[in-house]
Length: 504
Image (cartoon, rainbow, N blue to C red; front, side):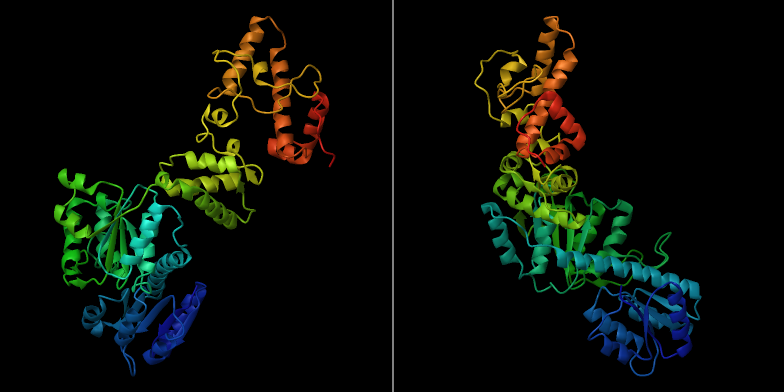
């Protein structure tokens, strides 16, 4: 975290603030005049700047203007004597984070600096996430159309409406439009209008004045002010309350707005990019969305394809997300087998890219082994019957009930009457659980005893043989994949007479 800069020609004020902030484990850097602070801004920036208003040479207001021109998101607290209060508030209420009237209560001053620090860190995290955001991935023709549109739109200030299903990457496209625009050096501010309660959304967008409502203890800048000179991304615009749509329309029309409780118009130099998963034309017909706002937003429409419209990108995205997830967790990257990738590419992914990313996080944490097969995927993705239909089908008849033994090919050797599975021979569409039920029913009907023991031995043999085949006969690796100990698998192999095990 960067230090807090204190600018004041009064030695005692600087000393008091330095000691108070040091007790809070906050680093400081002090200046005796505004000019030195301006010069320091050429090579460094603070986390928060606290400045007196009246000093020898340049004033605190001049310093404020310099800071806001270069770093609009940097919180500035202006210290002022009571005699200067009215003129100071009128001069800097459009830019300063808050004012601190002298003489001030030290605890309240530290609390105010803490609040400014929190806002600064929030905005810094947004800027960092932008710098870490990768270029959009995609090789499908539908995504190439999106890339071409981004290239054409990035150099203009025109309002863009991005449509597409939830999770398809609308915010990523908005960030790309900003990143490749002349506004790239200025803030990118994102707001999900559906995630903010209606009573707070107006203040979140436009800010509020001190005392505008209960709990408004300080003046707060809204998202339009935070995005000054840059881009404001309004996600889920279709869910914006109807009365707030009128205020947004005014900003888009003439570029001016008022803070909540404010009387001074604020000028907004912001490019607005909106997004929605809803059909705005339908919402206009239903009277839920203003038609004039719809036309104001719908200057350029950019539709994002769903993931099922770009299935050829699923392997590329899967590899990227698995790499990112492993990096975050500090583990080795999992690899998807070719059948598993083919299976993922066949899914519809109603949650689109976001769902695929979450799935890759799950795989990194939960999937056993480094190579991920279809059975390793979450059960809700591989419902009963899906896995069996994906495996080679046996050449058996169409009887509704067939003995399990018909679905097993004999092992090269048998021990203790057990039958081992050499290769999958399921009939397409038939689940192994239904086959197990049929076998148990038949054995009971024949009057056999110890049914659980017999089926249990066959089940263990089949699973252990499959694991050994997957690990090329390596017993330790097979035990890890099965979730049992080395001694256990050694004992089971001896009891069941399983061959083909490598000595380790």
